[in-house]
Length: 320
Image (cartoon, rainbow, N blue to C red):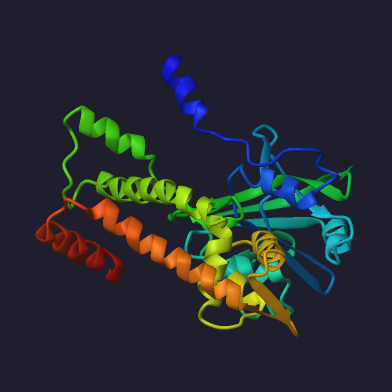
């Protein structure tokens, strides 16, 4: 019990309050719960609709029921409510661009994506790791959303890793680092080509370093999201669509980051293009300098030979 309490003490309150007083803050709170990313599609008459959602959830095994929700004011809501069927395509970790395409509501999204017609004509996105073809069973009103219950009439499960969305950004699932730690403690861990726990060790190291560096971000008054936007904008002005595509942050997280950076005087917007101010360039340079110093501190005591070997290994892995 003592250990559990000690771990819980590492969690610090960042923000709290009435969800109606600050919708963006409430959205960030909801973002603490990781979800998969799926595309929901349907066909009604001559109209084909589709959108990226992370509200998909299982309801029942017998009968086989699932649910998802759509904003009442969405232009696609009527088609989804009137269609006899809808399909859910659970995206793989390689389908970030598909998620971004359907999240943006691009007019040609079905022309730019490979798909196959399923039951009721609902498109099934090629390359997804799971498909669920559903008959619309019930619709419930849930505040500013419609909640759609579907009875699964056919499913398909395929190989691949899921695409994950958490804390406002895309992510991938990994074996928990404690698996590698437990294997090392048991004396069964050997970082060989055949041992997949080696990748868990890499992930654990990356997460550990990121947590350590978070103190320095906070000291400079930036968050992981705002620092990523600062780094990207240091290459030149960009639209919010470009930021969403290249930073792998969700649109909500980007909007929050830009709002905060503009408030701090680090970013300015002109004709839909965002760019760093002089103060923003200084902040980015300060962040880069601190990252260089932090890296040097962490690598102190490690031999040049070991560093060179580690660099070769990681370079090789990145090139595969």
